[in-house]
Image 1 (cartoon, helix red, strand yellow):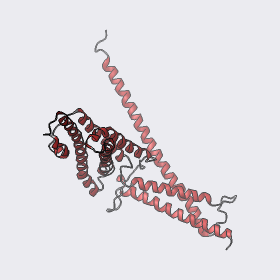
Image 2: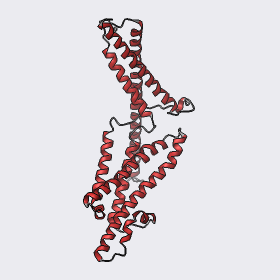
Image 3: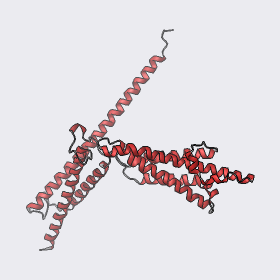
Image 4: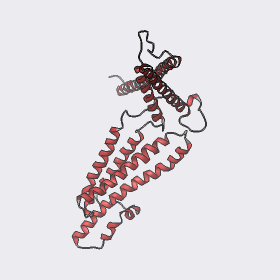
Amino acid sequence: MSRIDQKTHQIVDRLSDAFYRAAGDFNAYLDFRATRGRMFGGALPPHRWVQRAAQYPDSHIMHFSILAALILFEGLANAYFFSKASDLGLLGGWIQAITVAFTNVIAAFFLIGFVGLRSLSNPDRPFSFIAALIGVPVALSFVVFLNFSAAHYRDLLEINEAVLATGTLAGTGEILAPVTRALTFQPFETLEALLLFILGITFAAIAAFKGATFDDRLIGYGAVQRRAIRSAAHLAAVIKQVPLDRSQEPQGVSNTVGSSTYEDAVRLKLDIDAFFAEQTQRALNRHREAADFQDDAARHGSETRSRDDKPPFPG
């Protein structure tokens, strides 16, 4: 076998592999739209199929950067207060604060946002939906209680410092039990503790929102679409590597298998491109319709207000 024939067979093998992979991933994507990702029960009625493209950020770097910034900022904000109870001083307080901030942000991001809220938006999956109905309140209670305990810990540090300054040691034993104090739902005694609690809850809400928008709200839909797009892009790259003669026929791939695979691959790539182009155009049309509706509503509201501003009688 000559080197030209060997190279031709390699191109045909790569083209066949890319074609079957793209076809399988695209069919899996279409099946997911018809079943909404359900493992049992088969396809849903056509009116319940997914009629939109998956919505997810182009890159997750921004999400991870925001999470890291939340953890770092919350840790730095609480490091000084927690350092009063650590033998390592500011370093020990920073380690404690980072641990609390990391637990707070990651629990809110993953348990509440990424898993819980996204599962609640998928009632077609009853098992995950029921689990989310139970799990989201539990995770939310955990995050609130964590921040409540941390704020009480800050309160007890302040109380302990005041007790030591006055020379009375009667109340210093409470410093070791911030969780027990939090379970009694006692109110905060310092403004710093209240601000610490509000800060932790705010960062947890931001982390939960980032978790809910980390991928498409239909669990698994973003993954199958990304896989279909990657396979289509790989197929397009392999098609470009096939040498063509002046008649736009694959050069050196004149056998029946290679030629038919090339034609099927080109047809599949065109079908995938046309499908996603139609989805994009449909999304743009919906966006324009929503914008026009908002403009009409705003114009109608301004006209109503202008009529209401006029006096009921002339003069």
